Length: 337
Figure 1 (tube, rainbow, N blue to C red):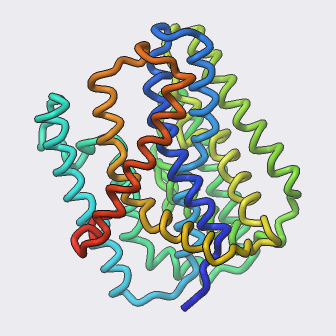
Figure 2 (cartoon, helix red, strand yellow; figure 1 turned 180 degrees about the vertical axis):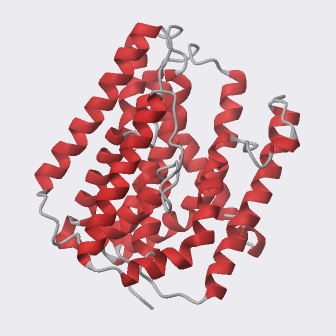
Figure 3 (cartoon, helix red, strand yellow; figure 1 turned 30 degrees about the vertical axis):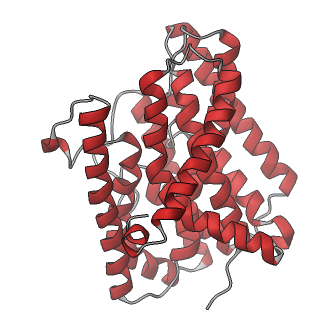
C-alpha cells in the first residue's frame, strides 16, 4: 500500500476547518449594516482567508487521482458512493429544511438546486468522476510541454470566463474539459503542482506573498463594492475569481513543499491526522445542521462576531466530528460519510 503524503493530509485537515469558517462568517458578512463595522471587517477577513479551502479539496483530488491507472470497476464504485451520499444527504436536508427550518423546497428542482446549498460540491464532483477515467489517460499521455500548454490554455479560459461573468455574459462555447466552471481546472492544477512541486521555480516566500496579496485583493474588492452598494458583495469571493484561485494555488504549493516536500509525523500525530481526515468528508456534510440550528434562534446581531465566530467554528467542528465518528462505527455510516 502506497504511503500517505501527509502534506496533502494536513491540507485536508486545514481545509475542512476553513470550510466551517466560511459558512459561519458568511452569516455575519451577510448581515452587513446590521452588525458593527468592526465585526463585519473581522468576519470578512476570515471569510476571505478561508476561501482557499474548497479549491484545495479539488486540488487534493487531482493530486491523488489524475495520472493514475485504475480499473473501471474502481471508478464505478467511487461514482456510486458519491451518488449514494448525494441522495441520502439531499433527503436529510430536504426534511430538515421543510419540517424544521420551515424553508420551502420543490423536489422538481432537485437536479438544478441542492436541498442545502453546500451540497453543490457533490453536484460538481459527480460529473468530474464520470469523466475521470478519460482525464487520467490524458494526463498519463501528456509530455511536460503539453502539460504546460494545457495549463496556460485552461488558465486563460478560466480568467476569460470570470471576466465575462462579471460583465453578465457567457461564452458561446465552453472550453472542453473545463466548461463554464473552474472545478476541473483545480483538479488539473492540483495534479500539476503535486507532480512538479520540487521543480516549480517559485520560492516558499514568494508563494506566501502571492497568497497574501491575492487575499488582500479579494478583501479590498469585496469591501469596496460592499460599501458602495450598501450590501455585502460576494462576486470577488467566488471560487472562479482569479484572486481566490491564485491564493489557493499558492497556499497549496507552499504546503506541498513543507518538510522537503514530505512531512514526517510521529506515530501519535499520524493517528490523529488519519482520524480527522477519515471524518472530514462527513463533517463537511453534517456541520450545516448545527449551524442552521444556531441561525434559527440567534440573529447575527445578537452576539458579537468577535466571540461567536471562533466559538461557533470550534464548537461546530467538535460536535460534527463526534457525530461523524459515531456514524462511522457502523457500515452504513461509513458509506454515507
